[in-house]
Amino acid sequence: MVSYLTEALVEQGHDVTLFASGDSQTSAKLEAFWPQALRLDPTIRDVMAPHMLLLEEVRRRADEFDVLHFHIDYYPFSLFARQPVPFLTTLHGRLDLPELQPIFNTFKDVPVVSISDNQRIPLPQANWLQTVYHGLPEDVLKPIPNVEPGYLAFLGRVSPEKGLDRAIRIAGQAGMKLKVAAKIDKADRAYYEEVIKPLMALPHVEYIGEIGEAEKREFLGNAHALVFPIDWPEPFGLVMIEAMACGTPVIAFNRGSVPEVIENGVSGFVVEDEISAVAAVKRLHALPRAKVREAFEARFSSKVMARNYVATYEELLRQKHRTVLREVNAN
Image (cartoon, rainbow, N blue to C red; front, side, top):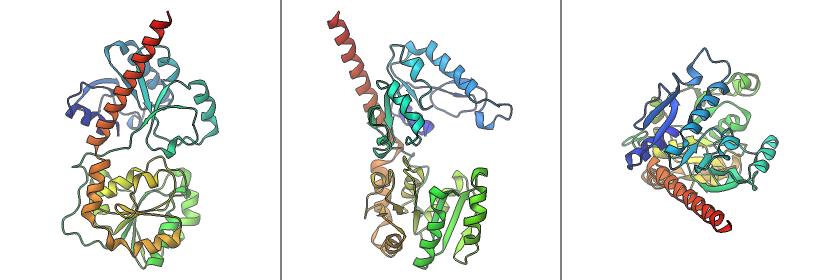
């Protein structure tokens, strides 16, 4: 997502410096703090050590920039709250964790951006600057012309909160084939063996394994709908807009960010349970796939995301200016 934002900002004429690994592909000015992505470097045992180097390098050069934008959770808070350059942090993860409360009680003035309004609920005390939804480049995923969809799709991790068992039941009750493109993490292996594996043997289920970015268009674009029966407060749910980019509607449970992302009756259906999800499958014919794509372009392209972030940067600078004026007048 950082790459999509960076590319869109550069395309819109902004001067962007990206602090990232040396193997990053970017149109911005790249400042490499480590030769390759940490998750791909087999020599790395402590991923926080390179992050500390990154933060120190940004601190040393902070005066070169109008705004600093972080995407590494709360790690910059203490260091950058003590310097004058305006900064903000986009919070990408779940926030309903008790250990986060003292962090945001301590750093109440640090400006943060949410990726959905629902994500904010556990931390009302945080200094929320704006909500900016994720966005994708318009050419990354496109509808398949003259498609004849033949199945429901599930794309995501095999874990209890993602609801693959519910997706299998929904497809079966709707009389539809379900294709499953899913990753099985070590932490979820026992859940897979005990709960999911027996369901995979059902005749209407096809497990195709984990897929890459290049395979998503064919997988999502040929589906009647993406089934997204989550059971946790998903902060955003990128797969929903990936499906929309392909013109594929989404049937999603009313949890977390879902009602913010899915326009009910336009880009999909927001449902409460498995029974209403089965009923929604029967109504998919009422959703023109071209309208689903239009909804994506209007709200969830990387161009829209970049424009919304620029507006957020401008608001941050205005707030900083007002703060400086108050301090000058007070003295």
